Length: 318
Image (cartoon, rainbow, N blue to C red; front, side):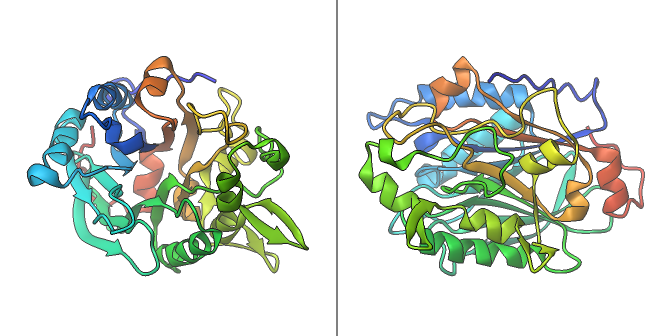
């Protein structure tokens, strides 16, 4: 599936774009070749995100955060945030915010039980009064129980009265029956460690792990959870037909882990989800050259977001 998002602010001044993308090992090969990184920057230059949620910013803190500042420059001098790496993983999460649109209010890094600490700046859309919590997440790749703990931790960003957007690589599957891609046929998956990493036991059977999505955006005791998953929202509430908001995102490279799946997702608190215009999964030759994951792009109405977040000024947002 190939989708193109046209992002000239002069043409579409009412759009605010949030991109989530896992660029495998930050586009740097073992030999130090950065050609994939350069290709990724070309893709992002075309997408022009106002908020970029990044995963696998591998060793980006080295040499005085040189790679972080280089990416910020390519985005148009965005304000960068980088969470810490851990002894288990040198692939931290990060967020980039467009200073023409947002002012930074706070910065938090959530580490409790997290394989990758969550990068969580809190911003304010210029001219509004309500804070917006933004988080880039990369759930554990090998332990379903840890992923569930991480998802539970993320629900604290959706407490009553809070407005939030979270997105990233969930290393697990959507739980709803409306998906475009069927869940993996585990009997056909050659990589058996992948089977152990991505399945849970239910009713005595090993099944695909959908638990993090259920925690974040499921329905429990007749009540919805704290977030709306924006691919599902675009498909069911917006009835998006221009492109498939449920298109799978990974893996664009490997064939030994079963069919492609929608493991990269963006969530928002319900009032923020109500401003969504559409959601796109971007797959192109350039994307495939840069990473094994496709970028996910959530396009919001800027006017609706301003209203939701308490518009009080006349600040121009590009």
